[in-house]
Length: 212
Image (tube, rainbow, N blue to C red; front, top):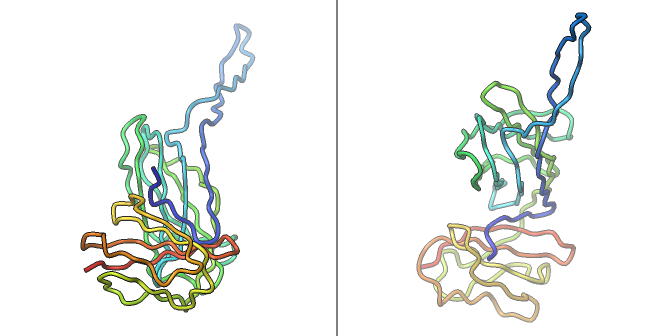
């Protein structure tokens, strides 16, 4: 079953599983012995996705294990070199279980920008997620919004496919947008939904709509 793990231009998926620790022991003559051991990291990142939403950028990620893990720092860069923190999310995991997170950047940069997660454990040591980049642009509009039945897309020739997700991330329906006269949402119950529009160049746009 598909869930709301969406990317507009680039999707990065990673899994960081272990790190090396250095143990120092000494033999009977006092000579130092260095031994390296691989130990599990306190967090295992299983996915990290970003998408362009209406006037914002949405970051969604999951972990499959969190042990002695503290928090995430969400960082952004305009050049992939200089980074600034946008916010923090505390750990919601406990042991070997899947945890879901999301963060919305309501003031994204114009054009190309880069995002990453700084993952900090309880000892304040940290590691980074892979870097994801995205290009934000305006001009795409779904109407009417709120909608009762048929949702129209301005500049429809730019898109070849669509997907519809519930506000809880559940996949609901999809279809080829080519040769379609709008997206029929009449069978959905009132509420908030997310529409993913796929371009022919494999990029995607994420939009929030309200169903009446």
